[in-house]
Length: 336
Image 1 (tube, rainbow, N blue to C red):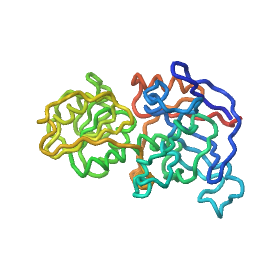
Image 2: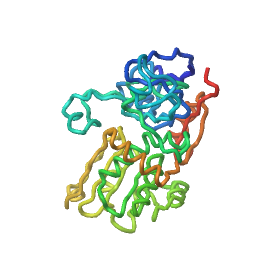
Image 3: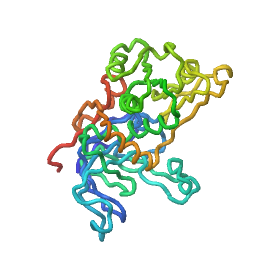
Image 4: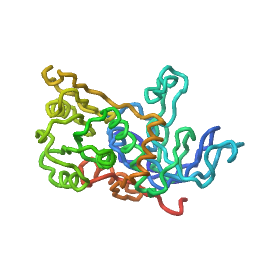
């Protein structure tokens, strides 16, 4: 199989040939058709997240088809069949035994493993995944459009859930997660207020084209106070700005796995029962809920396609904000 491999910080990913790994009980071999390029991949490759296994095949927004089941398993013992399309998200495995797993909070598992971080991921023509953390995808959504749903969409969904039922929703950082969850929020009857980097007029126009009622710079005040704010940009300085823009009782939800330090701010900005929350990973129930609603809408992800061997370019373009929506790697066909 072909794979883009991360060897250490400071080096670009390297295209190599690897043997297809043997399957353990409960695992699936997937032939990958598409894999999203996520900002978390950047945090891993740039060393912000420091526990990656090395060498590593990154990628945790995987769409593929089942090519093989583990030895001794068949369609009677496995929930998936050969040829079936599945998606693989960031949360790749949990212990199923800690107090968090046993209380339906597996996203906080004490001993988790993550796709494209502790486990090899989808920047490859093939990957191996735990069948318990694979999900059927809506038929109405193509492979390429489905890929960003598996992290940007899922984390966006959990972030939106934690924000509560408020009508006026602010979204800070208008990238992959924002453009997906905007569609969900509008489907739910909410108003979306989009905040971009100062001067990003193109991003603001894009947000309005998706249905945002207002779009402006992240340091501007919206025309009305927000009932909740979702922060997807990894910039801690946005937290005080979101608090200032929010109504009494509002929730500020930080959706990223990594964020720069939050600067100090006066207690008065938090007072009147405003709250600040973070999102950690996802649960399988989140995936079931989100993929069902994504198929009903249906969510349309704006994707920018790159062949597998251009993964470094995709990461660079993501880092420098050279596209709207999400980047997705496509695999060579036929796969060697």
